Image (cartoon, rainbow, N blue to C red; front, side, top):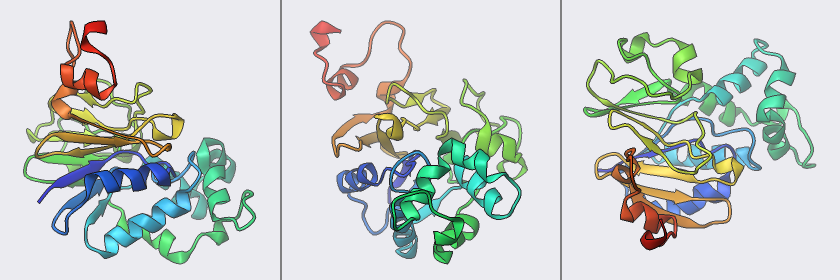
Amino acid sequence: MRILAIGDIHGCAIAFDTLIAAVKPQPNDKIVTLGDYVDKGPDSKGVIKRLITLHENEQLIALRGNHEVMMLQVRNHRLKKSHWLERGGEATLASYSKSGKVGKLSDIPDNHWDFLENVCLDWYETNTHFFVHANAHANLALAEQPASMLFWKKFRHPDPHVSGKTMVCGHTSQKSGLPINLGHAICIDTRVYGKGWLTCLDVTSGRVWQANQLAQQRTAWIDDFIPQSTHFSSRLLAMLGINPLDA
């Protein structure tokens, strides 16, 4: 069984479909999506629909991201709608609108709300890894983590977690399109909505797949992204289409 972690999708259904086709999930694989399925990209509705299907097939473990938190807070009158719209919510409502213009919350089907509110989790862990949307306090158990950390805190060289497990997260978008691997903590939000890439990591083998909104693909290994002081690895250079002699 593979544990396949996927970073922030942000309504980019073409990249998501391309990534899934490249990864070829098997019936016994588990797919852990790290949140931020909605906002900014063009097809939040399509992304949620695909995730619901994966959940119904018992393949998906979906985490909640800060953009889902905002969306739910608006629905529950705990956040001004304008605050969410300015942060990508306008694109989400447009994806649900039949006219293609900004729609209404009432355009969103009940099963999509149920998915965001009742299916999505705040965190998930295995024997070797734990998965959160944004970050985690190093000295607190996952069940004790505050929402401000799980959904909002940026990835800035976090300390190793007290559990000894490797943290896998998204949220902090990498404009380079490349994951960050600190060994004890890995960030795989590679800014797919901003002409970047959507990343999938097999946490057992370390294999990485990426896809973008142009339906392009590339692959690497997570150890290729360990910070190196003098040079990139040859495999990473090949992934980026760079001749090692030119690096």
